[in-house]
Image 1 (cartoon, helix red, strand yellow):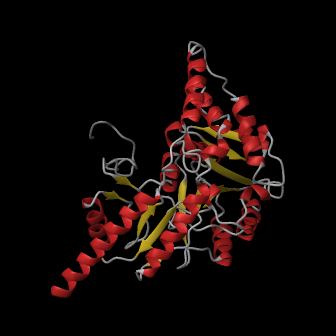
Image 2 (image 1 turned 180 degrees about the vertical axis):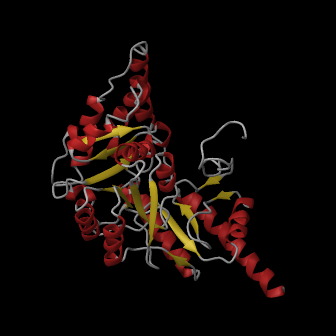
Image 3 (image 1 turned 90 degrees about the horizontal axis):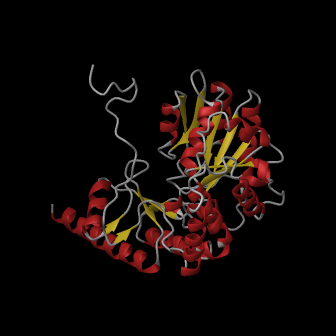
Length: 371
């Protein structure tokens, strides 16, 4: 037996992670390129200093104040008020998802999603010994609702994971898709988790699944402060669901899983929500301009409700990715074969991306024409 004695199913695997490279233009992990203002930084620093004076004590394990603040924030996105007992939080939406599968997945149970989708989902299933099942999306990355319902009815998953907007495609789901799958999953007491990590970037007229919570007791809507909130370094993800679901998660959560410092940072950030979210409209406009520019170059581009754009297709996408990197622009080699994903950055960063891609594609055309 090899050392260390890693359990079956994990041997030989590489840990998840996007490349972390020190380059001038980093557009690969869907961060908000606009950092907090000096006033927000000062508020966070004061809050952390206050928390530090009591670090000899454990934090509030129920994070009551934070849940109330998150509920208030979410209530602005739905006509139905969200209450603190409907909210749960953890260290990033990754831990939220893992806790959901720890509580509602496991041996003898199945989690299901529709590819292409977030590459961590099967890892959550693997780590919780949950069977992983995967349907397929249509060519436009939407869902065939009849086929999706048939798959749910056939496989009877305990948890259905539905990102909206989807990562890496940016595709948002219509409310009727969420309702259909909630109803199909409820027939065998399963949950539907709508992952709205990029929900704040959705286009006008695209509702949040939060609006459907009163209709579907088995619906969970997850969010994060890592993207639109510009708090990727703070590691705070959360969900809204029936209070009974939040209560059940307590069985699997680690003791005091949200530190006093994390709670203080998140609360301070929520006090500055209008400011931190103030660049969302600008990022949407930059996203839409990027979609138009890429299509103007004859490329395929997925419609996006997120802060990133999936584009292609390339016979050798790695060569294009490397060519951009050689010119100081880092994007993500992810998604279906032949496609690449670029995060939306500042106007200056997007200009650098366009210049680099124009050069790379021009060079590639020249090389092909002379070969």
